[in-house]
Image (cartoon, rainbow over all chains, first blue to last red; front, side, top):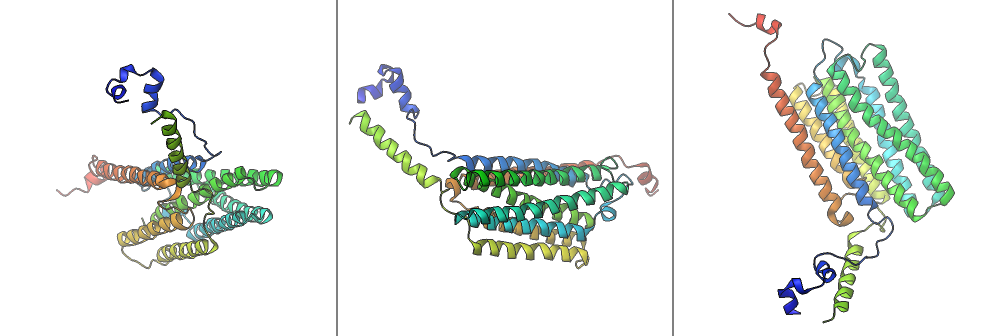
Length: 214
Length: 135
């Protein structure tokens, strides 16, 4: 034993490899690393938003003699939308609590409520965009508007995909019930949905409220 | 000591590690946790909107700093009560990834603003600014 350790060249290649690498398969539970992997994805998504926030921070005051933040933002609408997203967060929480107690119908009910709040959020945002564009505040009008539309609509597209995901989950729940795989998917969606609410805190604070201050 | 027993004990160690590390079987959150998070979020959202809409703070820089502080606190509230973030989830890897990302985000944001502010400040003055120069 000690001689082998002193002269590794005497070992056969497999025994040598086994000293440095773990060659034995362990039993990994199905989807055991999904939650961590999804979290890493969310972190990379956060970097995308950080870039867009940085761009808005740099360009947000370049109005190019066009409409400024004060002219185009309507804070009551933004407050309403913030409330919608916050309500959707708590109703998704209720869906998770129902999932923990294994009540499928309740999970589906709260998912539908969450999706409705999400749809209200996206449609209000689209109406806001339409109003701005009708007033001539289009994305190509100034650097401020370009960076504003890019940042806020990237968030809006994420929410839209979240709504699609909720619809898919509803179908999966109906067909398969609360299986281990479906629970895992719903937990990923939970992270996604709450994460979007966290990003929205940044949007309403640094884009809308701070923009109104400028 | 035979190689077989070594592998067996290694395997056992890996198993216990895997089970200790991944806590995904335990239920996440409770009604109480969600309601506390929701209540705090409503308060932390309502105050900044109220401050800005009613122009409570006259100084713009102070107002900006105050609403940034509210946003920072609310992000932490969401992380703890809605995303159930703590040092134990996934054996601490979630928190580690979050801290790493937060540092990168901080560098990107502060670096961009800092560099671009100085670029802007050192730009050639525009015609309008030059006409306003004294003398």
